[in-house]
Image (tube, rainbow, N blue to C red):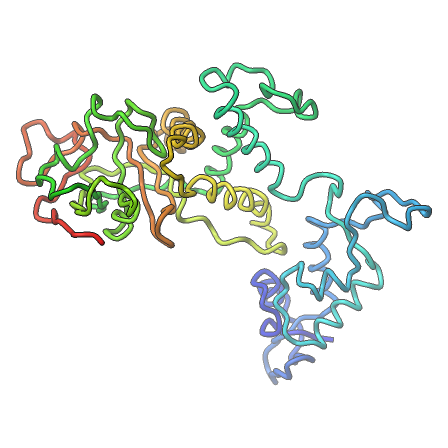
Length: 391
């Protein structure tokens, strides 16, 4: 039997078929050509699929215990090949029932059952996420300022006592970010929007609408502890207001909004542009599957809404530590420092927010640019300042 690339949706399998065309007709959709090869041997395609499956799956006889008295395989999930194929664990994206059945029959002859590799261990990405959860709990409730000196977890859990150091999850996070090329360059004239909420319009000056001075940075924020000012902004006006305005707050109902543009190029960690989840059959990129599973779950925790109920200074600690790690430890390939993080908004779906590691003294406004301002990073556009009455 022969199959053409139009019959399978998975991009990596499509690419394999296109690279191994040897037949002039497809037995499943009826496509045919008198001159050009348009299909590949299904036998070759199935061998390619098996190779991909074996990247994450194994035969249970290789790694799962068997006990007749217990009724079969012990302590691990074992799937029949039928379930693996027809319950879409592989995401083959095959709509043709005959083709799907032939793939199943070809696999089932030699591989009737499957289990996850390391079936008694955690799911892909689960151990990394568990280590992050442990680390977050540790620095919130057990040891905060010298966690990097502790030789093991600062509490209980003897199973991880000798296998993990608290700071290792930060190093792993740094490796993942570099592997996925998430450190990007922000070009000159890139716009960021900043909003402040008050009882009345705030004066249109960079002193008032830029980051607070050190002596007024008295509240903990998602990325910065009290006393360390940073520039918080968003990629658009609506997100900036959503991130700043709390309907239940008594701080006011008027948003003063200003646009800042960059005066120099700099590097940021951009967590809003995660690469697409790669196919199990993509030989070049499938090793990103586990890091991406972790990173997607991590981002939900990283950008989750946090209630301002007095505990926020505790809940913010993990993201503050991650921010300092990327600010002071991580370098890009050119050894440049990172000057900010762009992350998914906690308040607006598909919105993007940022924290830039700039203080008020790093900002100017376009109608007042003092001498020696070449080293300033952000410029507020005074004409962009406006007030919006909120409901």
